[in-house]
Image (cartoon, rainbow, N blue to C red; front, top):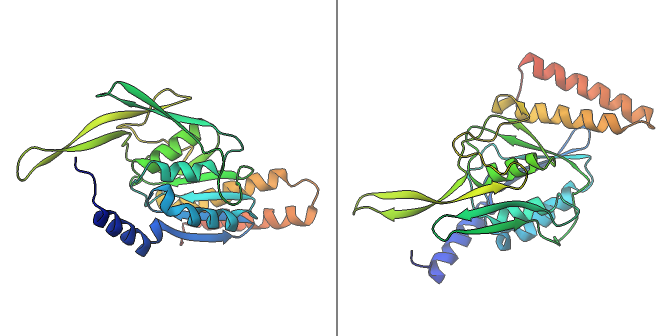
Length: 249
């Protein structure tokens, strides 16, 4: 395929800027839980400052929830940048096998990230049936590595990279050319999706993950009776809300 022109790149970046490169929402939830909603992945160079800012915002939380329920994919190094904040050391995440070239490319977290590390935070990732491609890889790999819990629905199942091939003046076919290989499972999620650790409807995923995160904080709170009582009260309130079905975000 032809390389994009300078004008194409300029327009691509401008479109991303107008959408804040799909970093849509940050929130400090009750009980000290951080929420970051990312609806797509742009190149790491485009989002470096945004991710560093998000990490700073989340640095004082006790756990982090990443919301990928409306994320449909994007550039590979964009997810890798965000992943790198959640590891203390360089970590081999996955490999990508290119069938045409018969080559395998390893993917590692970055050795250094700008801003504050989030490696000490419990991590929860929200998914839906619409979660597809790059965010699936993010969730699948961190789940397999034991670094994150996935909460929500089974994802779309797009693990193979594709390239467009023109068949005629009116038709283009997307043909797979590579596949991801997880370093733990040695497999992928093509056609079957990422299976959550806790499977719930997408609209209940955030509240469910919030409760799970608070339970984790509560389990670690052993020397602060006042904080423990606050957490127990909040968990009870959220569980009652979840049970009632009155889930509004």
